[in-house]
Length: 302
Length: 302
Image 1: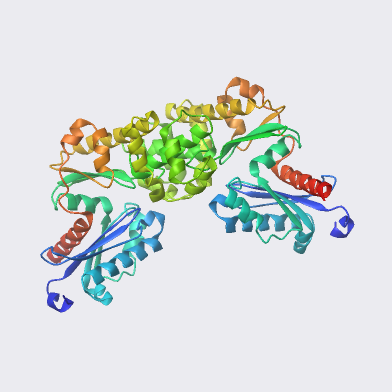
Image 2: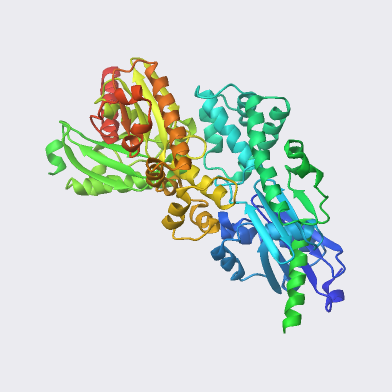
């Protein structure tokens, strides 16, 4: 389809940017998906230029997928749900970006994910993929918990599971911690023979590199490895705490999002699991929905 | 002095490169210090080009301090004690460097520190500054423990103390961990009002930024703050474990090196503290000593 048909009904693009990838989806006025694209990481905390590059790249791919020209980006109304923009100066720098869109509205990745999960309604979400965090929006109240990024927080996330596993394996190889099946797994994973080899592969690497170890940690925990189990138990206990804090706002719906939501579910408190409702739409939809809300608010206040 | 006087007695430069700084000292044949210079971080694990830059910068400063010309670097025999070169490919890349010296010999920062601490004799050292690690050299045996770098290991180091404090403060501000005096201290340290402010100052920062919090953690621990105390106790317990492992090699001398060695001493096991001997010479001296040893070995094997 060409843009000519949509002169009066603008197209929206919803963009979900995080620590490992950036996904963009173009929606018609009736919410039909016209095209989507995925590019690399887009977390302003880890670099603004990379964030802008990933947004442009995923947008270009989505435009191509929709059969549109790259120059048509200037006619899209964009909603961006980005990690890190809860930090005021990063939010400001993103907003000041000379973006390629007709209009651009920026919110956090959490807010966009929550809007998407509950199709615009009130609710709470916990995201546990590369990072972890919790968010709830109920009436006038909203609450954002955790999500302080790799190293500083993000307990129970993929990167955290990987980091804790690497720490324990290195302590074990030095003789300071008990034996664990994780040691053999990590040596095999990196095709190395000693601690030095593991360090060479992990030092200075990003959270997504650590997150590649998460499945291994979960497998070892499910196979009853004590060290892996204690890591997973500690991470899951934090996520359960996070859920209980969010429940204090009485959200009408609660969803778990992210690649580790499903494999971690058996390790969460049973009342948390019992409350999990399926995600209705993805974060990109939430980001586009947010843009549409903002356009509506502006047309009213004008 | 000019280099003319030393045509037959070569000058040595000892270089100690680590996570926060790079120190270079030029020695005459009789071990007299002719000049020294300090530049920024030189840890190959965190970037080779920065490492080479810091080495050149500290060398230039040392030459100037000694009243020598910059071009005189081509007549210096250099000993480099560098973090990270226990990783084979990094060692190879440093050795392959088109360096500005007459000859260059490379070993680990730990080995150089140990040689310096015991004036070339056998012994063991624990370094705890920005990072932490242990090393012993006794007869034909040597043993290197810990020191896997910020995040992955380095328990009991300044960066580790700072990281653990930040984690606890963020958990406390989210309501997931007990109150601690560290919260007020960190908010004041960064001149911010909430978790977001702390994250904005720490996210993506290097180990040396985290290490600036170490003194605060020790102060709070000494003031009986339970959270700070449990962090310091965990770090010190690891360092005591490290010492006991090194003692298994029966080193004739043992020293503690680095900015946190003294403030952490009261928290270490009493038998570890009882064994601490003073450092005889700094790591730069050890690096220069190593170069001299290698030159001697080569003149014998030729």
